[in-house]
Image (cartoon, rainbow, N blue to C red; front, side, top):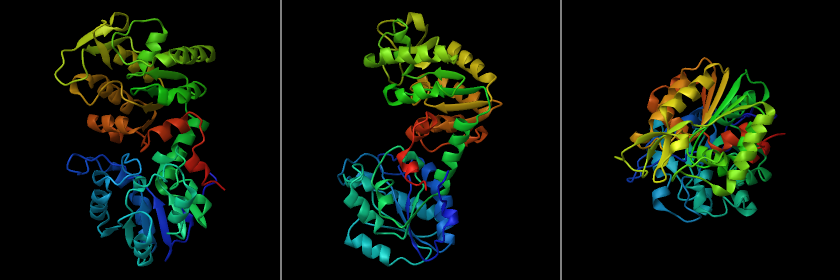
Length: 394
């Protein structure tokens, strides 16, 4: 990658500031629902501790928009991390300031300190130089292990690199980049991308770029109906982004010109509302009633998509096929989880919802690589340079 690894650095007795991604889901009582992102950061943290570093961790959680929001404190993460590491992880009251400086100065080799939510400061997302400089003052070495935020240029992953003496990648970021680069640079073919989720707007440029590298592009989820409408089909009350219909048509034309096989749902599970307990109907794409909305791919679409994946040597999947959180609209995503996990292919899955669906199916261990990222995963796969990765390069 042209990026130094933490493994190559002498961290003994040094203050090592690690940008991790502890943006974990919490329930109403602020208990952690899924600690997968904390576990993913353990190899880098444990390496630094074992080598005698004074470890300072920083992360965001949720979207507090520059205000202190008690329910978005990282305190539950500090408690869980203490359990996973088998050692006490102290919690700082903030991520900058005199109190934090004193706590960092008092660290001993092998100690771990977790800073409070970076996004309690509006300067974090604005990539404010003064804020980045204050973060940099806490360390001798900076390590970025938060691949999931690498597509954003924030103070804690990009701005900070202008003020640190040494910078490197953690094991998680390094592994994520290496796996995605393999798909981009030299994939085993045929290569298929299975893309779902609610909206096409956040994935538009990525889809255009994916057409340049894949052999098959399979589109499901709510985003599919913008493409269906572009083909002059009636979609009832289904989700659609009318301002992107023309662009969807352009992507389909590009795929046709490049010889890329593009698949859309041929049937769907419909209901009047996105709610539990709704009466559902299976309808072909051409026959979605005006009063219903398509909320999952139907059985014929599952068969079509699974058959399209059957002869592929590499499969990349991001985004559920329907509103899988609701049981009535989860079948399509569950079936595609099985099709991907059991495929005789190199399989790479990215995105929180997709990861959750895969774990729900009980087949996560059958997938070759599960990325911790959604946006960064897709953007890099689509050929975009990620600011949080580029800034680490020599």
